[in-house]
Image (cartoon, rainbow, N blue to C red; front, side, top):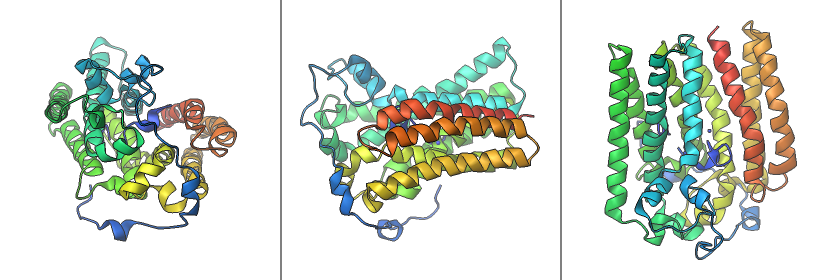
Length: 368
């Protein structure tokens, strides 16, 4: 869930996108075979230069705790540990669990069900998403040394052994909670554990060589989108009900919108990605084409789901979803399509709450 439930929204209400650059490919691919190179002429136009040092005086303590750009430099090791887990990326996973519980149709506002959901959220957010973010920062230390040299790992604020220890503690903690949830739910087959294990593996191959899915814009961003949308949804639904093939297909389709959300976060890293050979979509296609791919993935996916809901006899849910798509399109033109680097935060903060609500509408539709 890191991928699974982590990995699956930067995704990122605002920094949602920062998050979880984070969910099985059985074969090893050559980056050259996967890379699609298009016009690279306008990538030079965007390269936002990263400062050589962190703005320690003006840096925000809140940004530091949330793990987002503009953070104040810290020496307190526990604050640095929290920063590495990027708490700003937890809400999409937590929300995914809520959607899965709603889609099950079996969640009740009892003390036991609320407690189960909270444990599932802890597994998906702080543990497995925290694991995903920490391991991603570890394997991104060379890129961060270019884009954000003041981050904890490239700046030397935290040691190699401390990072590796944190990765293992969060991974084992998340898998342990998954086992607890399977026992608590009375599962004969440990479905939540395997979801967590699969998501954790996806998070690893997303960030680590030799596969390093993030080297390819299409594979990496879809892995991230599914981690933030599908995996936590599946965990929440499996906890309170049964996963069905139609729900699996529907959530994987929704993950294409998550791919679009993940692309938003790539625009600010063009310079470092290009130097390190990572073929993010803005690097491969140029910013003009990539920004339209981004909004197309987000909008077409939601329109398709709305059409599916109307066609399956749930017109009110479909119309509600359409109503939530309209403000997203408005903010795309107001912010993102004007300048995806300058206005990425404003766009995400304005548009993504409507996408999140659309997920819940879809979940409620599948429960009836």
